[in-house]
Image (cartoon, rainbow, N blue to C red; front, side, top):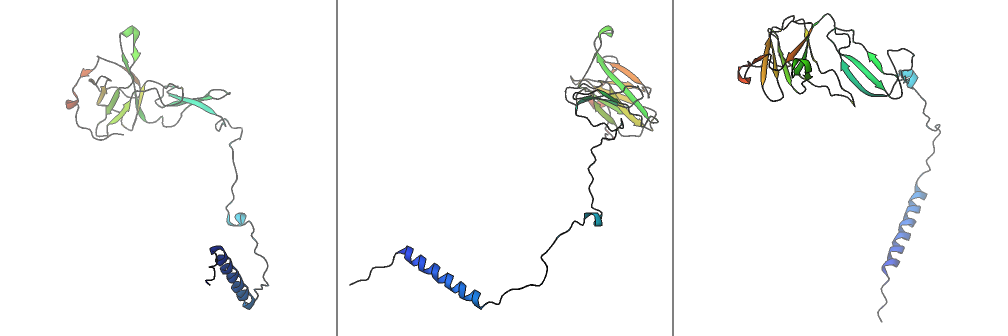
Length: 213
């Protein structure tokens, strides 16, 4: 008579009981672990090491550090001194004008690009303007008014010239690809450059670039 084979579940149960029995025997033979030390404790050592953090939310009452939620900004030369000032619009608050009073001892050149008849001039946006100075890198800008949320900046193109008090050429590449040149414009003032009033010049004869800023 053949004895029935034990089921797989029964075999697994017997193996588990054997493992528990062996583990109990090994724990019985192991020495007890005792310690006379106090439980580990941590303390805040930030002050001792100089790692202190103090939150400063900017509320000082000073007008030059306003805490505000700005919605947009526009750049323009408010006082016509050759640098850009900023108008900030505030969400549910007053509009602020920030006047730039740094760097007035440097030279500059402001250009307004216009088109159309003299009595109905309109600004030309998207033109590329290059300003060339003697023995200095070429400066290049794009005439534009964009840059911030629902804001329109000054359409005039402003160039900081640093210590250079002379401009040899101004090259305007109009949006249709045509180029015109104006020479020896006076610095530290604004000029209106009307399309068609300059000297037409092909791109190939405008001279090699000496680098751009």
